[in-house]
Image 1: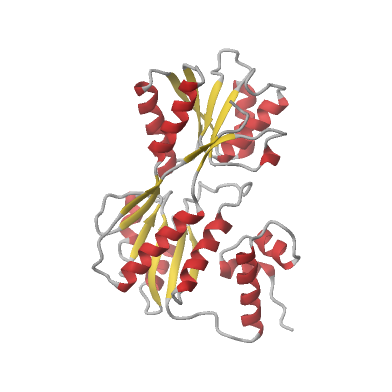
Image 2: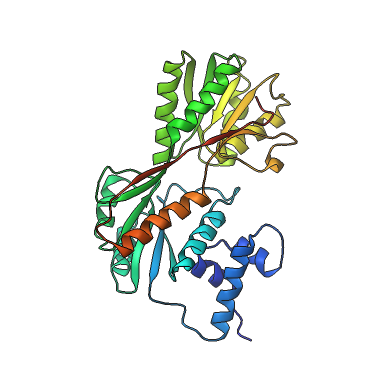
Length: 328
C-alpha cells in the first residue's frame, strides 16, 4: 500500500494537518463530507489516478504576511466542505491555493488561473488591498470576490452585512439600559474589521451612546495581556463588543483570571460564535456570521458566470443573527 503523508493530503486538499489527522484516526471534530473527501483522495492516489483534472475551480485564500489568524476556531473546514459539495454537483473539481503578498507567487497563480484546465476562481479578499486587486484583475476567467468590495462592476461580490449585524448589537445594548460601550478591536486590519468599526462609530452616534474603540492585540495571548491591564481600571466601560473570535477568547480568559462576573462586573458581546469550552461555563452572547452557506452562494454565482460570461453581476450580503447567551 502506498504511504501518503498527512501533510501532503492537507496541502493538496487545503485542509489543516490537524483536521486530516483527526479524520485518519476516526476522531470526532471532522464533518462526514470532509472525511469522505480525504479518503477519496487517498484511494485515488493509491490507484495512481492523476489528481489534476479539467474543470477546476480555484479557491484562492489570500492573506497578508502579517495577518496570520489563529486556529482556535476552525471556520475553514465548513467553508471548504460547502465549496466541495457545490462543485461536485456540476462535475467541477477544486484547486485550493494559499497565498500572501509575495508578488512573484501572485503572478504564478494568475498564470495558472489562466490555463485551460481552470474554469474560474473565487478569491478570499478580506486582506486584499486595491494595489494587489489590480494584479488579480489579470485573471481572464470568471472571478468572484469574497469578503471585499472594490466597487468594480466587472465582478460579483459576496460579503457580510457588517452594518446590519452591528446594529443588532447596539440595539441589544440600548434595550439592556446601557449608555456606554467599548469596541475591542483586533490590531489586524482587513475589510470586515474596517466595516465593523465604521458601523460602530456611526451607530453609537445614531443611538446616543458614549463609546470608544480600544485596540487589543493580534492574537488570543496579546488580547489577554492587554485586557488584564485595562480591566483593572474601574472606569473602563462595563459593556464590551469583541471584534472577532480571537478578541472574544482573549477577553474571556482575562475576565476569568481576574474573577470578574458576567452581568455584575462586565458584559460581553462577541462577533462570531465561539465554542462553549472557551467560555468557562458560560455561553457567549454573539453575532452569528454565516460562513458555509455564504461559500455556497459564491460558488453558485461563479458557476453561472462559467456557463454565461455575460451574466449580470451581483453584490450579495449575508445578514447576521444575534444569539443570546448569558454574558450580558
